[in-house]
Length: 417
Ligand code: EPU
Image 1: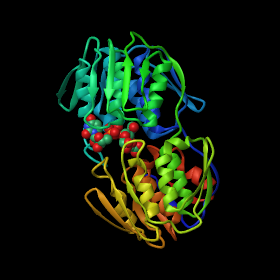
Image 2: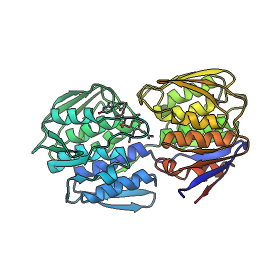
Image 3: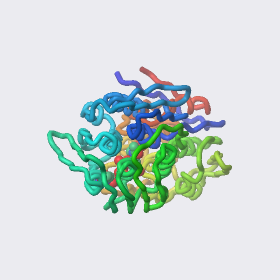
Image 4: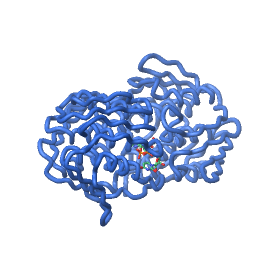
């Protein structure tokens, strides 16, 4: 039976907890190692299922991946294969991040089409359109996309929508292209900025990362670098909600408060008492949460990756909230599970109406995707009685030892094999 978490709820969390390095920054950083024959060292990297999957994927195309104290070293002395196989891509959509750097360095890349996932269809048309603009020949055959180019040529690319990994893929392709590429409507997420920082340390010339217009002057070659990955803003937000939902008092450290300002603003509206310094946030929630309306949008808006967790908190608010999901079409799978714990939530399309209840009851529930699983753990921490969250492998994809961190704050939570 897959591992599950057993939670005895009702304990206010107290203490201090550190945030790990960001999964969604570590994955593109690992893919960036494909752009050079020299080693790329991530001084910190979370120990997560998705990071291991990316490591295996890079190994299949010729990388040597080694774990170093707290971090990771990736070296692709020579690309030995251009194939990202379906077995790996189907377990992790972020695998598509190897497409841009592989074609840029090696001239060809074959990557299995990721297909749908639990939270929606998630096409990669913007990645492919952008690569075509950079001069790559793209073909789709037998479930694989193949890209080919002797040397990519700079282009002006305007993406039809804001895409995080799409922006990252195109940045990694453009750094070795001939001439100056401009990406308009680029994603502004901190993880995009972090990738630009790493690429710059490797010798790339990039301006405007963190704005909607990124300019990249191609160079002939990149070298190795040592890089510190940004803190995980979604883990930080999740831990702050854990403090709030249990009526606890927790200081979350090693984070960048500016990266979660939209989340902090919403939590403040909900009645969470927040204090902050340059790298920490202290969160308390002495009163019952107040209702609030939340609409997800690309950075710096409210992140879709925090929607489920904040919904778990709003489920206990004194009144009615409205949560609108604009990024993914199927990201309400936590709703039915929260209902099993007593939540009163109705969805219609992209909108969830959350009628706050005074408390949750523990129940067996099923994790369906990463952030939905986090929401169920949070609800379990607040609930009266025992909650068993099954299929916890979803959680393990993106949270480093979450139950250990929560346990150190006083939560009664154990992993059962
Ligand atoms: N989209 C397209 N065509 C494309 C690319 C995207 O239609 O070519 C659509 C998607 O289907 C979605 C929207 O555009 O509706 C935004 O998707 P985006 O490409 O930004 O998402 P992503 O890059 O695949 C990353 C994170 C996700 C996070 C989203 C949104 C990584 C590895 N993943 O995904 O993280 O939810 O951005 O912020 O960075 C998670 O960590 O739980 C997670 C799902």
